Length: 173
Image (cartoon, rainbow, N blue to C red):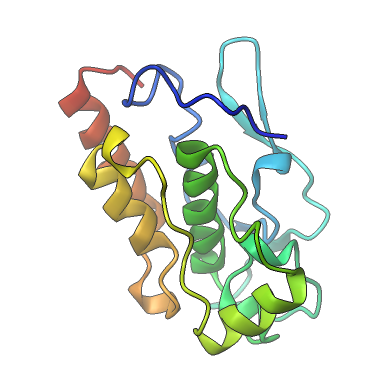
């Protein structure tokens, strides 16, 4: 269960779990969600559970396995080839969790999530406490979970945006 109290400070803390979890790499995690992110004694996020991960040897990867539907990109749910933008989609849902302290799509069944995300008929989750967060962070979250993989930012751009948001808020990462 996620904590029910909103953060006391709207900007990300030092060693923030909002910071992208690793630089772009040749590994696709394909099951990025809060349950697979641990915080060390310094509050630094560490990704775990690479059970669905694949090495990216070409432009994209094709696998029949997928993670939890609420964090899974449409192309993965469809069984199509995927690249690092599938993890970008999941990162957007992870940002939603961190900012809202709610699970994405908590009010619908996993089957409804799968069908709704595949068809693009399920609206993205609504951030209940949106005004508590910088607009640029909310916009980043929404860009990450775009339906079309080509509309999602690369992790390098995500990192640049997070660093700019932190700098604007006076927070060291």
